[in-house]
Image 1 (cartoon, rainbow, N blue to C red):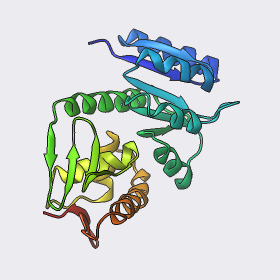
Image 2: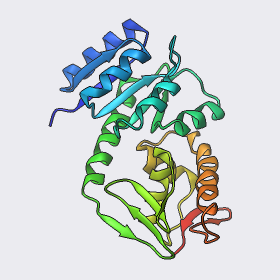
Image 3: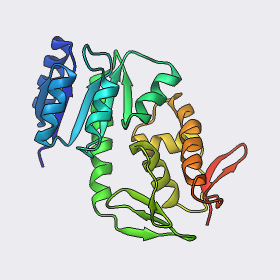
Image 4: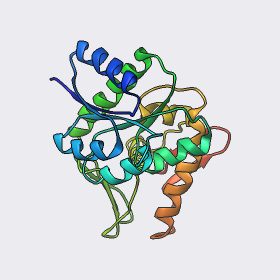
Length: 224
């Protein structure tokens, strides 16, 4: 299968270099030089999107917010910002991962492959029901509680899915980050704490039942 990549960056030299590299690797590449063009080209149904954060007119975070309801394709942010808050903001806007500039092509390719493989695995999942009215539809990537849909970002859903598919098992933040984002990036796991806090808050708005348990000094687990 030939995967389609949408690459969005106002750095034309970088765009040209990335496009050439991945075309040689057998990918079908579509390029966009700004956010407005990216929003239009999402209609071509890419399998994965590389999205620069710092662009004129519309930055990458806003582009992500506008296209997330139009595509379920994984979105990897390309960014020079290394602060934890910037990373959380990227994931909360609907992105799946981020890679800091400058980056190696091999690392970027590894992340792309990991996300594409995870998408293939998701296609084979079926609906699964849990106790107390909570329902997770793994194929549609939706979570409902008592008939009310819980609005989760892409990464929030992925965390909930991973933990719920492994009930009773304890995972540390690094392991959760690796499984959710598809690549082991040292230090990035700190954002998991904030994302799990937000997941819990959204669930708590509908029920007092606790689904994600903190195991102090070890990590988190989905309660059986």
